[in-house]
Length: 271
Length: 122
Image (tube, rainbow over all chains, first blue to last red; front, side, top):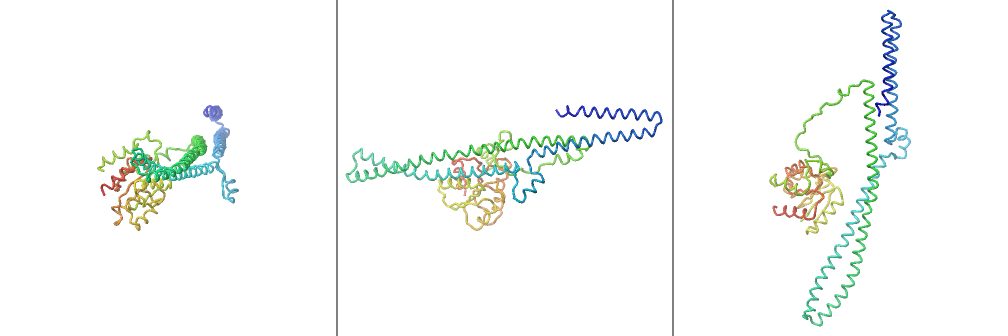
């Protein structure tokens, strides 16, 4: 796409340079040195003009690309500094990620609170149920004295009450645990926004790279001189820098996939 | 049995604490990275260390190395519970003298098995 738009201009420049060159040759052949040196100056001017034009265009493109990053420029930074905030999209994105962190933490905490509240209720109900089951069996087998029966009668009374209150609490907490999962929706929306921004920034970086490449072409910078140094630096020892959870596990061979892999590796080391 | 749980995420510390309580270990304390954990270990007569790897300040692997280098703490049983899953890392942890390595996400059964294994040997 870009080459299509550049070609006519280049053709035009080359045409102009050719014209100058043939005129120069003509003047030189007719020994007109005064006109010839004027032609050389013209030739230089044409070349300079194209460089200036290209640099100007590239500067404009660069400016556009930087603007697309939505990073506050100097003006914006200066005017906002007093308020101690900047409202760039990148800043907004990192605030969004903080929000995701808070929301997931709160959801995890609340869920665990509710489960911890449920655990003793269900375990007490269960214990009392199995103990009552034993008593009930004794009653059915007619092994119970009237006094023991009266005690069982009262215990059952209390148990039904506890069961009622307990299961209500369990149901309520289970409902709340479900509701707590709403964080998935809210964090998902923020994460999608951030993903879009990252994609956009990547796109802008690519166009910056392209512009930089064109600048190099126009001014004749030798890129190879600056890159490819130390490209094959040898890796030494074990690579043990922390990486966090592996979300691309299937694409890598240097990582383990589960606890079984860890156990196999450790036992191969004599553990 | 006094246990120190080291992880920078409070949720994970709480999960581990709960699982340990289910296993009958109720005397636990928490630290959020190696830098806070090390002085606690040095002054606190802990019997067992459960640590994450990737933490700000001092990482779990560095904490383990400090523990092994400390005269008083060198024999402290240490379990690594971490999302770090590179083979090189597991090898390094083993070389540094870890007693068990559990990758996140983990199950209650996996944690229980590793802890029991460690105490069988001690």
